[in-house]
Length: 170
Image (cartoon, rainbow, N blue to C red; front, side):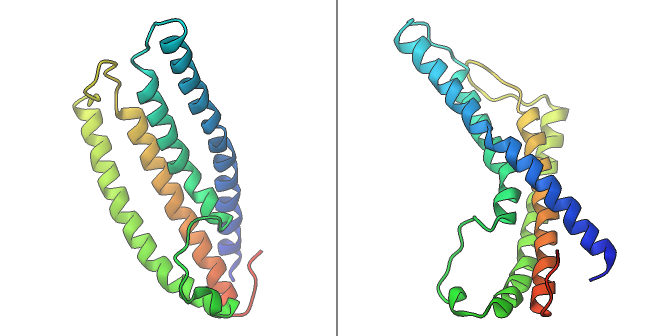
């Protein structure tokens, strides 16, 4: 593989690893928010209106920005009817083929996410609830996560392409 592809794969894998490891800790933020909600509502008898929505935003950020790291580690869910019966080289060929559809899907998702984010910014979109939080931060996180997923998908495509050609991309 050309040197720029090898460098691209290294940079994107490094970025996905760092972002993914930070995202792993968001689960503890969510647990903390839900614990705060349980304590204030049930023990102190002062319900906080923002806790459940904050937990929802946190778990959304968790899986959106953690997805590329999960994909890099190959720990995502895979529908496997015949795949495991293929040789590693044929698995890589199949992954190259399906990666094209994944990138097309993610680009469509990105177009919608950017449109939704622009709408949220233009009209100061807020979630209709008692807390009334702005939707702009979570939508920006969504766009960033989808971009990182596209970049990681391309990185994995290059790795699979090298494997399909009988070489390893390190």
